[in-house]
Image (cartoon, rainbow, N blue to C red; front, side, top):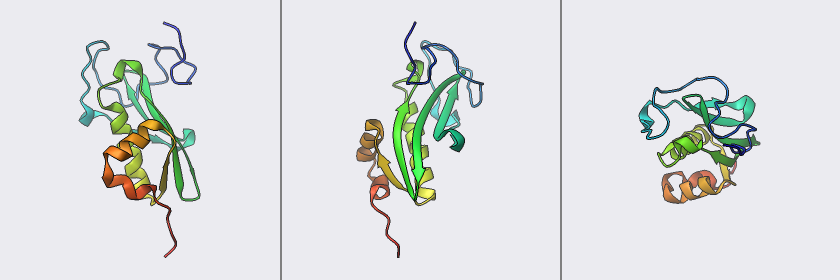
Length: 130
């Protein structure tokens, strides 16, 4: 198949990079065990990454002056609809919570996730010096 994979310059079905954090499931009728997946924070690339069988899913962000702007969540087509985006988003929000960062959800998926998970609502409020 042709077509860019969420702006990464790779093509659908093409492996990207190494196999860090992979699990041994086969593509196709794949069932993903979310508990076994390891989300990797890669601050050099401003993203949280998840590698499954050499295929990348990611949440991209920009962090500056106490704010993290979550710009995009991209899940490889082979892994969509199985909770991968939610797991990556939850990990990024937990990071923001630990670092006391204000979250700005530019990505529609992240904005929707925040609406469905009110426990993270406070992260979107402006931080004040006390």
